[in-house]
Amino acid sequence: MRLVCGVAPFRMDEKGTIMDRRCALWAVAVCVLAGVIFSGCQSNNRPAFSSPPKEAAEGSLLLPAVEVDRPGKGPVLTDESGLSDYLACAALNNPSLEAAFNGWKAALERVPQVRSLPDPRFTYRYFIEEVETRVGAQRQSFELAQTFPWFGKLELHEDAAAQAANAAKMRYEARKLALFYQVKDAYYEYYYLGRAIQIVKENRDLLTHFESVVRTRYKVAEGSHPDVIRAQVEAGKLEDRLRSLEAMREPVVARLNSALNRPPTAPLPQPTKVQQDEREFTDEQLVAWLAEFNPELKAMDAEIAGSSYRIDLARKDYFPDMTVGVNYIDTNASTGGRHPSDDGKDAVVGMVSVNVPIWQDKLAAGVREARYSHWQTVYAKNDRLNALNTALQLALFHFHDAERKMDLYRDTLLPKAEESIKATEAAFRTGRGSFLDLIDAQRILLEFDLAYERALTSRLQRLAELEMLVGRDIPQASDRQTHQGANN
Image 1 (cartoon, rainbow, N blue to C red):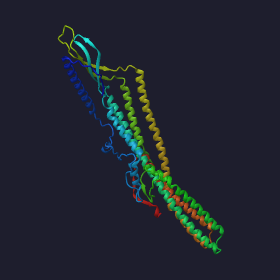
Image 2 (tube, one colour; image 1 turned 120 degrees about the horizontal axis):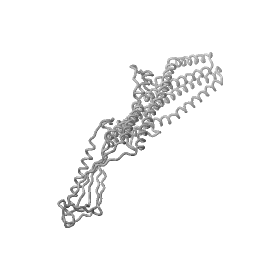
Image 3 (cartoon, helix red, strand yellow; image 1 turned 90 degrees about the vertical axis):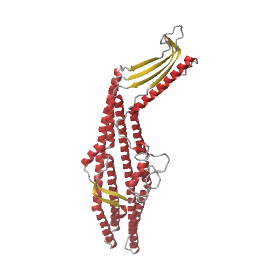
Image 4 (cartoon, rainbow, N blue to C red; image 1 turned 180 degrees about the vertical axis):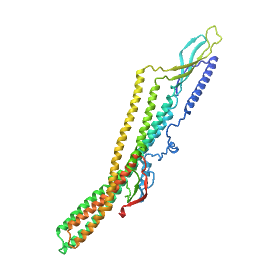
């Protein structure tokens, strides 16, 4: 409420003292009345939007609020920590998720603001030169006025703000899904890196064994010097590959730490196992789920609904708002010889005013602007739906391709490569096979091992991407199996 007032020099005679007291009482009464009106305007509660939980209203998030420069919350990450622990740490500490949540809370606080009446206006006037009237001189006045928007405007403002809050909530949900995908993608990549390092080390040890066999054969004149050179060259290539993989740890760890809101170089335990769950879905189901559950699309649906309310609001501008008020004028007794019966009587004036919306071009432009904004949101949603469907189809292709490769390497190629290297080594030891054949068999086994782990990791990453796109968990099949790298 805005108060405009000035300082008036009061007269100290008896009548002036009485009038001053009466004016003071009127001022107090007007202020109390204004407070009552103001408080009454807050009683309109229309539950047209999704409220945050009680904990969130008290500042704790679905996830507790993140404070600046404080240690991370959530479980301590150890060698026994699984993916769920990483997701919990990200949910409790990631600043982008906290920012999205606070954006939602801010949008919710907009609703009670727009559904309330404008602040009452209290005005005090002091007549620098008193206005002489038949009943005396007017020296000051007190006015209280309240503006009432045209019927339905407040409700439309509330509905539009409620839809904006719903859109902010869906944006928060979308950010949470994107964050979980970011964590899963980095976590699985970190797992693959550990498995790749382990496989290359195992092949390096195998090649070291082959080299010792070649050296022994060379010493007894059963082998050739070029075979020793080949073994050393292959060992050098594997050592270089191992160093590249180990150097990759730092950026992969930094990527995962970024999602967890940790320093880039903070140590993270190496994941040694991942959960490989069978999922039950069809491609058609995923397309339907995307259209129904994707939070980005639901946010745009809320924005479309809000823009429809703003069209109605623009149409309401053709109608005037009304202001109702009361004005109390303090009047002194007349100073002449004649004193009428109503001498010194204060005046009370009722007031009603309306704005006159006569600028039709401006009003029509406002309606057109609201309509164009509405259609902009509609077409933006259609475009985003097309983009999401394209991303879904690409993720589905990579998911099915990874599953096909997993089956191929696990069931066919890896068993044959292991059988081949055993047979080639046996032939080499008996002099019926060349060392070059043995090196080729070892190289093929290495590539097949890495390709299988890559396909396994890619399947998990694409599954996480699919869940982010459709906006929900994909149902699991009844049978579950755990892939553990150490036992592979």
